[in-house]
Image 1 (tube, rainbow, N blue to C red):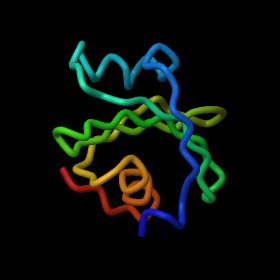
Image 2: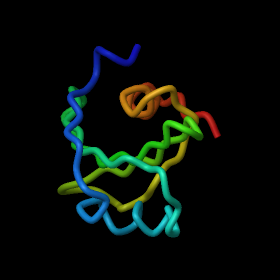
Image 3: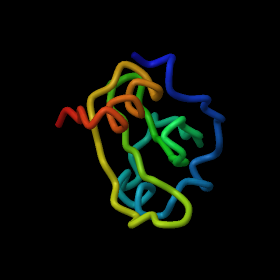
Length: 89
């Protein structure tokens, strides 16, 4: 499931959309990524390898700034879940 979707580019947490960054609340251990997905949208993703948890926000025109969190085996898995509308709490 995960490989068909996305190319991720690592970025610093400072580049992440403010709403997603605020959700982290200073939590450590998260990696940040920008992603372009074949659904035509761009995403920012923060992912914790330790917790196997990811936060996602749509970026660019039309984005509401709403953030989504899911259990995920990888950042790619998180985006696949978002696109497939299969978000796990």
